Amino acid sequence: MTSLAVQVRSKMFPNGVCAIRDLAFNAQRGEFVAIVGPSGAGKTTLLGLVAGLDADMDGCIRMEARGASQDSPRIGFMFQEPRLMPWLTVRQNIDLVLRPYAGTRNALQDDARVREMLDMVGLKDFAMMFPGQLSAGMRRRVALLRAFIIEPALLLMDEPFESLDAPTAEQLRSMLADLWRRTSPTVLFVTHNLAEAVSLADRILFLSARPARVILDYAVPLPRPRAPASASVLQVQHHLLARHPQLLEGLVQPAVKTGACHAGAG
Ligand code: ADP
Image (tube, rainbow, N blue to C red; front, side, top):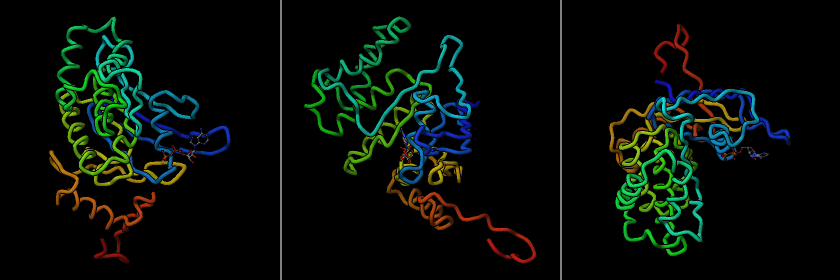
């Protein structure tokens, strides 16, 4: 069942920059969709539109609520910067995002979930610490937990593991895969790291350079779990880049035509 339907005919900024044109896709409930495109293509702009942070566009974005009891679907975010409140402890930073839902949730269950998730991401003994007392990787773990704790129907992630060292980024990806498997939000995950996209996503939407549009909608043909450095993930990347050498610059090779003149091609 479709969870998210995005159709942006045009997103123009007041300075005349057209960031997105004729970009459309659907995502199924619980689907993990990676969005890959050149820098400046319009990826962050797209997430802002989907989040409803920016409503100034020509187009339509529809999202289905998870159940009848939920008026508007919950949306979780994770950005490149963890965006934690430095004057609040880890636990207080997490409680802060739960506060708007206090009337609709069971506080005891929430407390148990926070403790369980702190344990899952290896932060059980750090709940009373302040962000400044944590490593960069630990701060991202708090941000990851915070994104999931509200049980979002849709999770928007904008290069969340950028600028981390490789082992820390891999540890976070594995935590993300685990949390997603348990709670199944629909995910839009922006990255320019093809190995990361192939290792995490069900589908990858490759975007053109600005104005962004979808140039390739690719279903990742691999079972899980997948490690970014595994032979199968490398093989998929190799296959994609062999077919479309300029894919990461936002260009796909035209489809090979079959017919009398091209018999045998392809
Ligand atoms: P990406 O996330 O793919 O790197 P962005 O969505 O951040 O790209 O930006 C897409 C384009 O829109 C860029 O050319 C950027 O300079 C421009 N842009 C982004 N935000 C604004 C804004 N508020 N006003 C004008 N132009 C903007």
